[in-house]
Length: 123
Image (cartoon, rainbow, N blue to C red; front, side, top):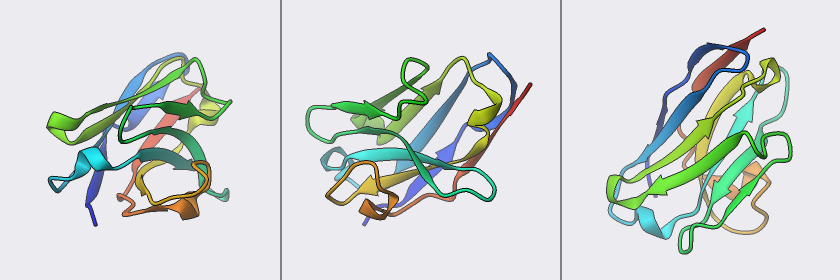
């Protein structure tokens, strides 16, 4: 088990940027693939991006490809989500979770969710 804490959210105008951080407790962070998801009011939690534990392969949702970048710093037990060219439809609570197996795109395949960080993009 690992404890994840997200930060970096805020209010930004459309076209702006934010960088989210997901900091993990524990000494085995480098063994985990970590994903970012988001959830808007009244909607289901949806996949944003994931970075694998071993070779840092990355995968993105089509809606954020080319605008968001996921990266990790194992020395700091941190996964980042750099978000550029933000749009109002990116408004949501963003969560990071530890991948447990199966399909990368399904939230049920993640555990140890953080409390989330709110991102609001104004038009």
